[in-house]
Structure formats: structure tokens, C-alpha cells
Image (cartoon, rainbow, N blue to C red; front, side, top):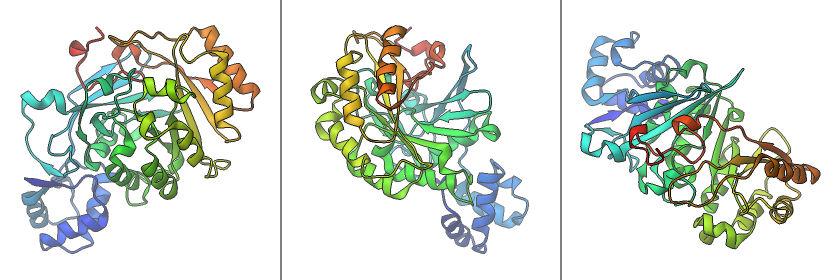
Length: 361
């Protein structure tokens, strides 16, 4: 098995270089080629000696993996299906072949959302998800493992729009803070001068509220935060999101209120609208009370129906009325436009499968 270099720091790359009798500064050269120049093979790394490249190739590989399929929505959204190796899913960085019989359970999706002046990549952090939210296709498939930092960074480098990406949201498959070690390593690559050198303001990490890891994220990162809320009443939220029992939303919000979001860093709350379930004036009032006086944004999301789940999305009129109430309470509130629903790329629909296998069809 060979070591994947993707996702490693210059120091770690330098250690690998030294094991090949190369100078430690080779680590900086490797990071430059991998993250800034997008090299996919050692043959492209012309400022490293041929002998050095051959030595590196004997024990390692860059680790880039091309998407299996690409689908394009009528609105321009693109969904990429990537293979990930089951040995990677525990966070390892070794390369082995993926058999066709295991490919279904070891595929993840990334979504590129185009706007006039932005190209946002919605990335996955896990294959499947443990959280089992009732309205989410990803949770329906169960949990298959954590992505390595290499698998996460590969999504950024291996989409066709890689050079033009402006923003990233960790809102794809999985719960990012349930895989915090690899997600935090990926954030380091994205924001470090030796990596992508992105501003943390370009990145949003979404969570359902894994409190111990949430505190670690808030203390160590300057990236934006998005919290999946969906219902302000604990018992009702628990019917939708089993995590409510372990990490009550009132405790999640209480923790967030201890941090400053009046500057450049933002916190938003994701609220999927279910007709007659969480879209009443009673819910709007309770949501406003829960979030007061936090400086935040609420994103109202249309629900996209899935099999064997009886709820339907709220009407446009109801969503606008809900929005108006929150705005009257001083809470910035938007109704998020659905993107990529026709290719099953919208919120809650990612399942790591080709469309021909999607049970929604």
C-alpha cells in the first residue's frame, strides 16, 4: 500500500521526503505542486530530481481520484460522484483498489452550485451518516465511515470548476463534526498559506450540534458556522432528529451565544419547512425566542420529498409569513432557493448513488 500525499502538511510531506533520502525542503515543494499547481503525478514535479521522484513514487502517490460520474441540472448545478476506499473511511491514508461489489457503499457526492459571481462547492465529510435524521436521504443509507482529509480535499481539486471555486460549504453527506479530525485537517489545508490560502470567510461548516466538537470548532476555527435546527421545540425536534436526545438544541444555542458573531464570522440556522409540522406562528415565535439576542441568520429551506416520509413542504405563502415574523423580530431571514433538485443534488437528497439507483425515482 502506498501513502497518499493529498491532505498532508508540508512538515508531514517533508518527513516522507526524508525517508526517501531527499532534503526536508522537498516537503514545501510537494505541497506547492499538490495544492497550488494541482499536480496529479510526480512526473509533473520538475524541480524535484528524477531519482527523487522515482523514490517517492515507490512508497507514495499524490492521491487524486477522478469522479465516476458528473450530472448537470437544468439550473447549472453539477453533482459529482466520487469513489472512496473503505480503508480510507476510518481516516487512513493508504491506497488500495476498490472492488465493484463495495463501490456502492464507498461512494460520496459533491455538488457545485454556480451563481453570477460565485462557484460554491458543497462537500461531503462522511460516507453515509450516523445521525439518522428522518427527512434526509443520506441518513437513510446508514453510516459507512469517515472520509480522510485526502478524500475531502480531493473533492476540491478534482471537480472541473476547481480553479474557479470561490466558496465551500461542508453540507454534503455526513456530519462534519462527527469526523472532526479529518475535517479540521482539511480546513487547515484550505486556509493555510502553503495550501489553498483561502480566507475562512469563504468556508461554512454545518452541524446538527455535536456539542463537544462544536466547542472545539468555535475555539479553533474562524470559518462560518451553520446549525441544522428545523424545530425550536425539543420534543418535536427529537421526532425528526434523534440527536436531540444527546445534544439538545437549547444547549447548542446556549453554547453558541457565548461566542462573538458581530464581526466577520457568521452563524446561520438551517430550518427545513414541513407543512403543518414546524411552520406555524407558534413555531416562528418559539424560534425567535430561542435565538434572541444572537446575531445570526435563519435560512428557510423547502423540503424535498423522500420515500416513506409523510411530510410535505410548506407553501410559498406560509414560508413568506414565517420569514416576515422572524424579520419583525430583528432576525435576518432568507428563503433559500432550491438548486439541483432534478438531479437529486438539493438539500437532504445526497445518497452516494447513480440516479438510476435512486429510490426517489
